[in-house]
Length: 167
Picture (cartoon, rainbow, N blue to C red):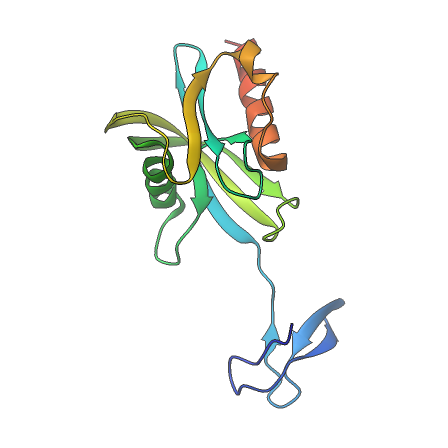
């Protein structure tokens, strides 16, 4: 796929910049720096159970994850977490403390970072959405049987399970 300079429109060429192969404009010198995708979501727990949504669409269709998604350019991570939780589950939440920050490199759409906040349900009706096939709370024992969505979902669930051992 050909990429073009955001400054002058010239086709970018590979070049070694800062000891990395990057796309560079041969005309004006503009450098394209690839960036991690930024996403955010919520970790909701009630009565010793963890809330997850089942993904409807690829990648990871059929797998379970925290309600989360990509940040819009004008959103804070906390706003993203609230919006995505509502879009994927019908729940309006109040995000609180940072639960964790997780890197992922197994998503075919690109590498990224997901910021997960602990959250409390404020209102709404728990229901699947166009992005999810199911939404529900799981006990620690039930989590071991679930297909989880990617390395970030697996790591975040593992962290929650480890916390439950100390409660």
